[in-house]
Image (tube, rainbow, N blue to C red):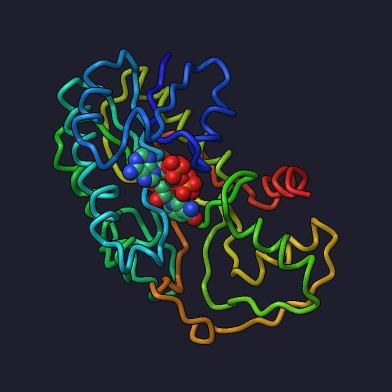
Length: 283
Ligand SMILES: NC(=O)c1ccc[n+]([C@@H]2O[C@H](COP(=O)([O-])OP(=O)(O)OC[C@H]3O[C@@H](n4cnc5c(N)ncnc54)[C@H](OP(=O)(O)O)[C@@H]3O)[C@@H](O)[C@H]2O)c1
């Protein structure tokens, strides 16, 4: 079985290669497939003999997107539509990763895949338009919305906490945003399981949720990171209003992941277990 992946050096693309096992995973980086160049995307999909396509590339700079909206729109929406239409034309199932940031973050109940969206910022809005473009492309697809992605590679919350925690005695950390930290390795495993199902003939399309359990706040996440890394740094919990950022973040990022378990047998992984490997790699 062969999977064509858009993206090469990002957290999830790196994990897809690492976790591929007996699946032939071919990753295309910017040089081979720039998401700003529709012709390159169409040509790559027209030429592939892959059973499934996964898009692991995205414009992920949430704050920068507020002032760089054309680029975010191109990468997260227009390019995704181009890929999904080309995949539909070839009859190749298209798997794509999206985000909790498509939701407005009100309330305290886990979001269902078919809940009304309402992004708070440019990044989330462009990611939602990407989802809609896939739905409209007419092919077989699955969108996997995830949250708070961490891994041993790339810049992420774990890396930042390990750096700051080693330098400081006290850190102020947001304690009123709640979500599920999700290891890129776990996302890769979920996508590869889904890819197998589609390569085996699955025809149902849909949007799914996938995040690590249990849900926690950033302060709770940091406490576990410090604990596992043996760092003694005091955490002062603060509300989001005390840490203004260019893009607003949802307070409630809880994702109901039950349909992924029903349809694919994929359960929410315990992020604390996945964190052990990441902390080991980074310390
Ligand atoms: N990170 C999170 O916390 C988070 C949360 C929820 C959902 N997600 C979603 O999860 C998916 C994977 O995220 P990630 O954390 O793996 O992202 P990442 O580490 O930031 O990687 C994104 C990748 O996209 C590539 N890319 C960006 N613009 C491109 C372009 N114009 N042409 C070709 N490649 C381009 C980047 O290439 P370069 O290396 O060349 O820059 C990078 O390898 C994304 O869809 C993201 O929206 C992420």
